[in-house]
Length: 256
Image (tube, rainbow, N blue to C red; front, side, top):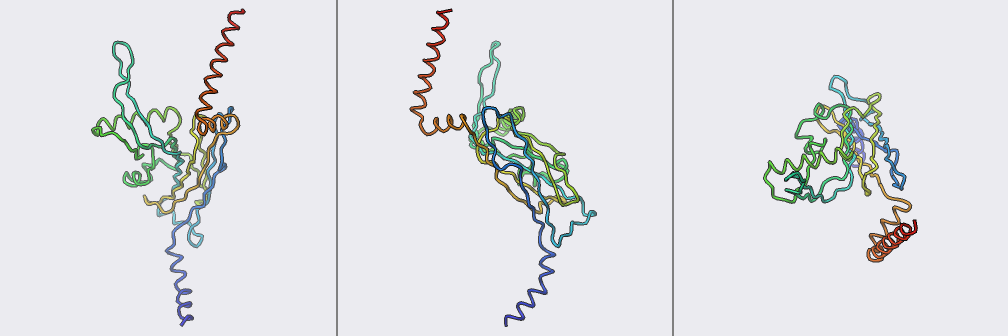
């Protein structure tokens, strides 16, 4: 009884292989990035290969295969305040709070994303800054909430923490791909993810994720760990140092 079953599997194997989906094999140049006092930013090289069933790339007549890479930082709660000028003075006006928003978000693609997928697919996979699913904690009306969403995106875009590059991914021979993404000096620490999507004819055919760890090192790591684990002694030492430096500066001023 086992032989007919084995023979049936052997006969069906080519059909099963023909129905198999392509697989992404991604990697990054640095899995661990350390931030020291001299850190001015980093450049990540993201590369990989596309493994097609039976080793055959799709027919070019079916349209080009595109790669979209999303590097996302850890989420964090955010409070966004709106400034208002009153009698020549800028004051805090309305504000809204977000339960979670990515601390860093970068998108690299082989073509403009709007030419690769439709709006619904962009929203499902959060492909593009304008498709981010933010989580507001306030009950503001849609018009006001949209204004704050644009403000948050604008602030982080100007800081280099949100950005898109529609021509950053280079695909070679329809199989190999690579892209470079800049990590700014102001990047937060934590666990990042690099998500790679293979897209053809508006459909996501394959996806893969690689983790990236960004952490402080040296004196920065010592200070951060001390502040987190030993908050009371850290605060007392910080106050004592402030008093000491203030006294020293005053003594020098009186002498000279």
